[in-house]
Length: 169
View 1: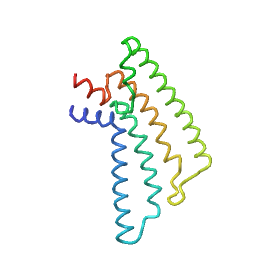
View 2: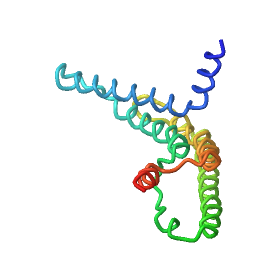
View 3: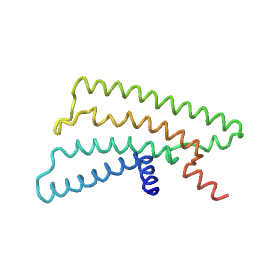
View 4: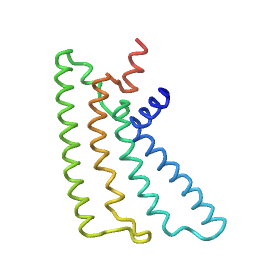
C-alpha cells in the first residue's frame, strides 16, 4: 500500500513529464500514420499539421518545468563560477529575480492572449480546435516552471555540464 502511495506521489510530482511524454507518443503515432496514409494509401490527413502544431506546443510547455527541476535549461555558468563565493550568491539571487520576473511577465501576457482567444472564439481552420485550448497549457506551465526553478535551487540541482565538470576534478 505504501509503495502505491509513493508511486502516485512520484507520478503527480512528474505530471509535467507524463503529459509531455503522452503527447509526444500521440505526435509520433499520428505523424507515422500520416506518412502511411499519404504515401502508401494516397489519402493524406488534411488536419494533421494542426494537431502536430498543437502537440508541439503542449510538449514544449509541459516539459519546461521538468527541465528547470532537473537543471537542464541552458545556462551560462562559467562567468558566475569565476566570481568569488559571496558574489556567486548575489548572482544566484539576481538570476532568480530575473527568472521569476520574466516568467511572471509571460504569465501575465499569456492570460491576456487566452482572454482574447476566449472572447473571439478563434479556432484552427480544419479541426476547429479552440486556440485557448492549444495555448492554455502555458498558464499552468509557467507556474510549474517557477515552482520547479525554486525546487531545483532548494535541492541544489546542478546542470549536467556543471556535474560533468565537477566529476573530472
